[in-house]
Image 1 (cartoon, helix red, strand yellow):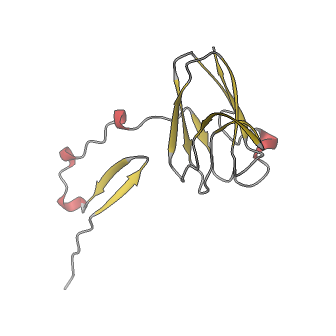
Image 2: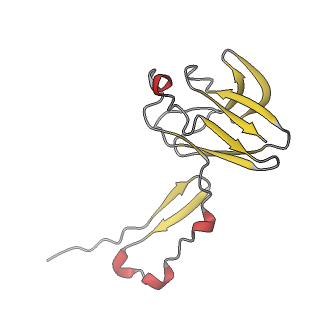
Length: 136
């Protein structure tokens, strides 16, 4: 004698909610997660950068320097299990141009760059983490 328990739940991922249900009860034609619902990140905050050392290999933000056209947006995604930020300027004095606040794991932040220039940024929680956006 077996007991069958349907599993139903919700997953929250970067502002989107996905429903998970028992695969035996789900029609495959009803599952349609389209890529246009997910914004691909331009910059990734990878795992384990909350510990010093990522700065030695310049992998605290990947890529550490990104070049974009004027008027374009940059999206950062925190793939680490720690909180991080994307804050303009240099530690310990932010410039005040932008600040993501603390990004939860797997949270993203998008910013449009409307002026030409070089924008240095860092993580307020992990001062060895730094990178830049160059707007041409």
